[in-house]
Image 1 (cartoon, rainbow, N blue to C red):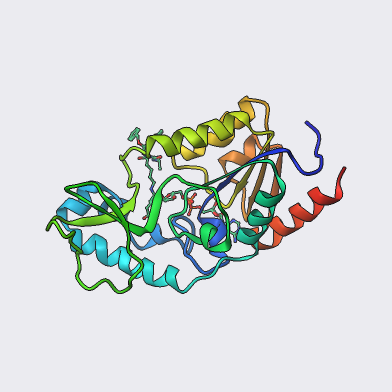
Image 2 (cartoon, rainbow, N blue to C red):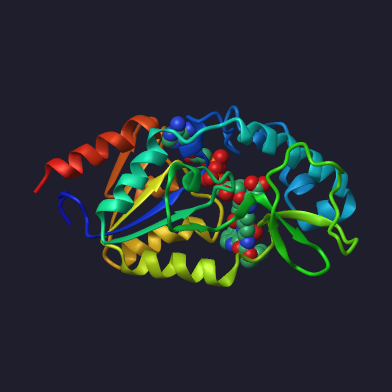
Length: 238
Ligand code: BJW
């Protein structure tokens, strides 16, 4: 499919790179979180069960960082796209909540949200924006431990959320992939699924990724610069 103007059906997959220009650390790479912290020690249920206070301290540190961050021009461009494109789905792997803060209405949060907690006993999910939390690890009114409502390695993604993402990937005309290393499944498969269903795949990233091998277009650069540019280009084309 040749490059053309505003697509009528757009699915967007975002990763940590879109929030990097807001000051939120990415996971991988030179300055990524996993350079200093080990996923198996912090982002698994086993790690949480072993030492909930340690895991919560890491999340509290991140909540503090993220709480000071604001959406950037890339988040805001996606709000404009949502307002202009009839079939638009924003799928994010990010837990930072910056898409909603920017004004995006329909956001499929594949890996949960760092501002929500889940009771380990009852499974109830509640919003907790207070920082710092009064007790570490925090507890539910029922007395059970609360955990961050995020998806750790080895855990299944919420089925409805995953289905919404697959549906969007299978039905979109264009899939725009922004700021993800494309190594964490099942999110990493979404652009390939879209491509297999005939969609054009456009990637924005500061470096090439495994997705670049089959993307129709890879735009190398900062998301906060390149996404507004791409939107201007799409608007100018017939
Ligand atoms: C910029 C930029 C700028 C920087 N502008 N760009 C199939 C094969 C092999 C393994 C598996 C498989 N299926 C499942 C697995 C296991 C596992 C997995 O994928 N492992 C691989 C890593 C090997 N997946 C799971 O366990 C998932 N569960 C699952 O599938 O359940 C069923 C099952 C289980 C087990 C076996 C089989 C099936 C769950 C995955 C949960 C991921 N959770 C985390 C933590 C969330 C909570 C938290 O935040 O603490 O999610 S891990 C972390 O990685 C986080 C992210 O959402 C995710 C993706 O990272 P992302 O967003 O791509 O960030 P980075 O840092 O990797 O990349 C940033 C990118 O931005 C880079 O490319 C930069 O270049 C770029 N960039 N600045 C533009 N300014």
